[in-house]
View 1 (cartoon, rainbow, N blue to C red):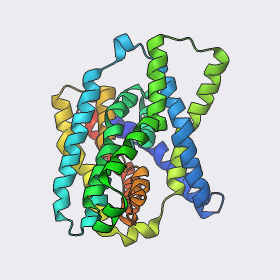
View 2 (view 1 turned 135 degrees about the vertical axis):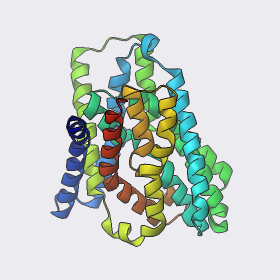
View 3 (view 1 turned 60 degrees about the vertical axis):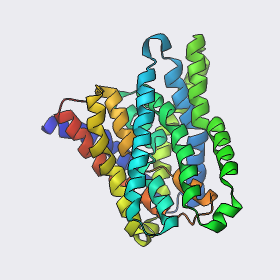
Amino acid sequence: MGAHLIFSLNATMPVFLLMVLGIILRRIGVVDAAFASRLNMFVFCVALPVLLFRDISSVDLAQEWDARFVLDCALITLASIVFACVASAFVKSRATRGEFIQGAYRSSVAILGVALMQNIYGSSQAAAMMIIGVVPLYNAAAVVILAVCADDSRAKRKGARAMLLGVTRDIVTNPIIVGIAAGLLWAALRLPMPEAAGKAVDAVAGLATPLGLVAMGAMADFRRMREEAGASLGASVIKLFGLCAVFLPVCVALGYRGEELMALLFMLGSATTVSSFVMARNMGYEGAVSSAIVMITTLGSVFSLTVWIYLLRCLGLA
């Protein structure tokens, strides 16, 4: 039992400490909000796509491509979205309901999930397969949900058709999707990687995890967390505990173990992605609820994921 707890803490504590470093750097003035935002953009647009490209480009697709896993990730994500929609019935404000639903299902699999997979297994191949199944669905569902829950004035400013066209464009041009697609193409063609290029790719890929986590910590806004504690806390509980409690047993029943089960855990239980706040603001919402959910789940996931990893290890499933 003690060994499982140590394993779980070793998996999550480095992530937590890098986030704390970001908070400290923001407090002492080394990093400000604008720099943290640009750093997060660099990780999202450059370092993380390169990391995923590196991991996937070396995969033997004939042996390791798992269409069933990708499809199951998408179906479980769809079920979690429905779960969040049903839970939102307890939220009275229509506008708050849209941010509540998005915050309750949308995980930071690209940064936090990949970071944890790298820390535990030294590879993000399973996470990359999972991202293929869920990231397009995350974005498309968020647009539909936020459009449906928007008030009349917002709906007039941004028509549903225009928003759907916009999200299609965003999915196709998403740097993470581009990085995965490039890696898949490289692996399919079995192209060699020149040594000099390989070292450069490794160097850039190595920046993704530490810089992404420092940026997440530096972007924490504790005032927003206190102001929007009501609906935000409910969505956060669903994100960190509810989805895992409902769907992890389903994943186990489907036969997933080890690295794939861990990727599914991070898909369900990781902190809500910062891009949920960006999308809410883009579609006319104030974004206060989304911001609070991101902050609560980012800090709370250190505890919750430690608990979930510990349970899976004790049960011999991961």
